[in-house]
Structure formats: structure tokens, C-alpha cells
Amino acid sequence: MAIVWKAYSSDLVVRHAIEALRAAGVPGRDIRLLIGCRLHDVREEPVGEFARAAGPNAPVGTFANIQRVRRQGPGSFAGDPDMQRQGSFADADREVIVTYADGGEHARVAGDLGIRRLLREAALDDDAADRVVDELHAGHAVVLADVAEIAPSDAQARLDQVAPAA
Image (cartoon, one colour):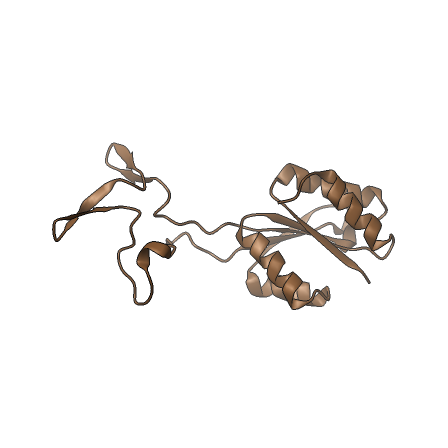
């Protein structure tokens, strides 16, 4: 069993990669599409205000006669708060695993543990699994395929030909 994988930043490109593998003879049951979701930092995104939006550099008040802007961290237990991501209630560890068995797409939501379990079952080493999870956290999609029917180098070449990866 040989496993190949590649990350892509575009949904359209990743669909072309899957079709290229299927055209090469890889059955749908041996292909997985992993879709990640980038974690947001609310200090870098515009937020609503009454009648207008506030950007990251919008002033939010003063403390000790020093003007503060919204992107600045409010404080932390350890480390520099300006260098730490500020989450929100919308934060969730959610990746999607899409399978292609029985001629259709079947999607299910999984977290990091589910993704790591899938990668362990696919016999990816720890470094490769960490890279896949990092790609998913960056918001990219990853094609993961068991290529028993064709040479792994041929499958990797087909993934590389589709388009530039993430």
C-alpha cells in the first residue's frame, strides 16, 4: 500500500486533482479529500459597530493616557498578548473528510483527532501527518490517496501536474 498526498489552496484545483487520479485508475474508495478551516484572529478582521465597521487599527480607548487600537492584545497570562491570536465563539476544530465510495461523495466532520487517526491508519509517519494537519489549519484542502493500482510516482506526478499546490 502506497499513500500519496498533496495540499491545494483552491477547491476547483483539488477537484481536478481527484479527477486526474480517478482517470489514472485509482478507485474512488481509495481517495480521501480533507478540507481544513483556517482559524480566525478577530483582532485582524473588521467587526461591526453601530452604523459602521471597525477595522483592526480603530481606536478603542485609552489607558494611562495611551491610545489603544483594536488589534492590540488585551493582556495575557504568559507571553506578549500582541503576538497571540484572539479567538471567538465561532472557533471550532472542524475539518471535513470526503470519501468517494459507491459513486458519490460522502462527507463527515472530524477534528484533529479524527484526522490524525485517519493518517495513522494510512501509515503516514508523524512528520508527514504534522504537515497535513498544518496545511488543514492553514485552510487548505489535502488529497490523500492509496495508490495500489498505479505507481506512486505516477500518482504523485498527476497530482503535481494539476496545478500549483498550496
